[in-house]
Image 1: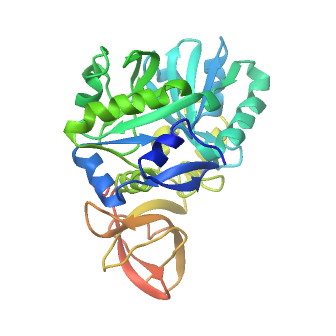
Image 2 (image 1 turned 180 degrees about the vertical axis):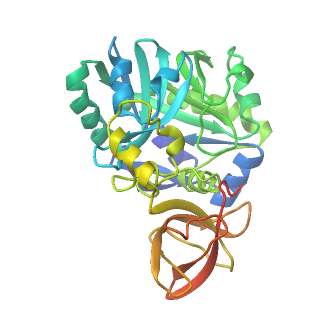
Length: 359
């Protein structure tokens, strides 16, 4: 198992460590609910250094990215980030990712930890045609996510970069606590605002301690992957391997907004045809109508008990105090307001399809 540069820090803080995507990662510290509310109301600090990072450079860097991602890379300007996905050539998704434009010929790409090798091979396969310069810096890069309404106030103590001038899905490169060349990104995966900081591994403990100390009086606490999951689920954000994978199309996953069919990219024709014909299943949000917690892979059935789908993510929402989840549901049951049933221990528990986000 791999360890991030902050592994010893997590152990010293008493984190519960679990295997995740090939890494030993902190799943929780003080408890999922406490960590969840800290991020919603104050601030939380996460180690997400297991994520993968590639630099794509050269005069054909943009051409490569434009062809292998579903979004329109042409709309990016320096300092802007873009959520996108890698279509797999068969209508499914290799991974979802964020593309950062450093300059006209240099891009920074962030991918999921479990897909680093798969994504790298996918990039290499298509790059034979484009010849961009590719560097996999995943093993050398740490990533700290500072999330929550107090995040700006906390981080501003440590940098001269005016954080209030970084809009959502934009970034700056600057100095944080004396560490130079830190990518300060207003992206996040919690829906509560904040920043993600990318930097070299050797500065990981220094920056973790500096941020923790700067946030001590503002309610900042360390948070693990469990709270990260409940936070993203309340906002209806997809998790690769659960809600999207090689068998799900971006259109089925509700990612039509990052699928720009006017651009020539891998699977464009397939997806254009799928859009024209209409999808037969869709990823939806649902809320339980009785006290019950939906979980990954639970069966979704209709009023007659016929299978109509599967739960991909589910939890007890700390904010709403009800069971919520995401599921692929067959037509016509995926319309907002539809009554569906989640099979839990051989009982069909009523649920309702709702508009995302939950919170």
